[in-house]
Image 1 (cartoon, one colour):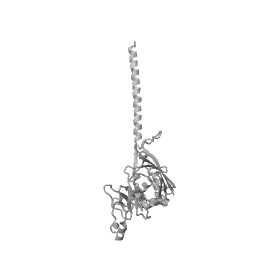
Image 2 (tube, one colour):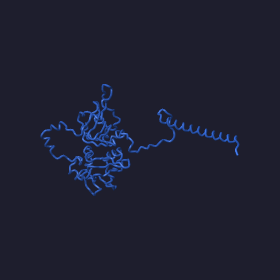
Image 3 (cartoon, helix red, strand yellow):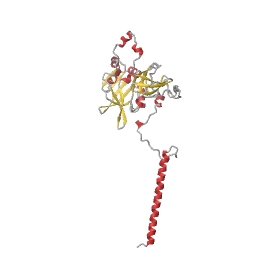
Image 4 (cartoon, one colour):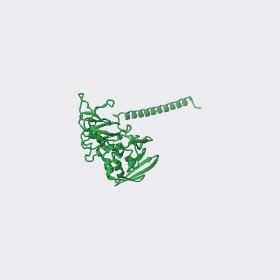
Length: 325
């Protein structure tokens, strides 16, 4: 049986052990808190250890539009657009740029000959928003996106039926559905010419005769196409945009392809075997889930001899092959 002295000694040892444990626990807690506070402070110590991998999905990462401007696949003769100086921006009395604009208060109509002939807008994916603008100095109708330069002006925003631009005179907008004064005052002879039936927008500005002569159907998934037809379609990108509605398709939180809508059997895409509701996955192996690769695939159509579309139709994967002669 322990004596009173031994019991006091045992109690002292236990208390000392508890005190040491409490001390080390408090010290460890202080270090953890200090490291967290210093890590969140931008002026704190430099982080060390293994890098933390990003958990952001690839399709959610913001892409650098400068890559497309440097490639400039729509005007290779002009070259890198990022090397060109930005247009001068006029300043107001307060010294602030005049091109600041409020989406709730649309800017005035743009002066000049530029005309908006088509828009593809995707609210969830701004990089998929394009505008077809005509009336440029080179006489071509080309595709533009936010940040693109158009005859000295820069595209600020692509909307569903308008484009906001900025130049030396400040912000202005191009409207798609507007009636030009010159059109309202056309002569009688011009009216008789316009009385003819307009070409169907879904045929990309091509007549039925052109489609019949230049497209040969071998089977439901194999076609022969004349090179002249491809060149004519690519030369009129504005009409091509109107031939179908292209909408990115998401599955499990990521883009897996683009859905094609508004396609009729007698339209350009319909005659090429594409059906309404088809989901386009790749063109010649280029993934359509990325705007950059989609534009690259589009640019290579000018020189391609063969073309293969990988599509999904009614939950069935299939391929449509084209031989360009």
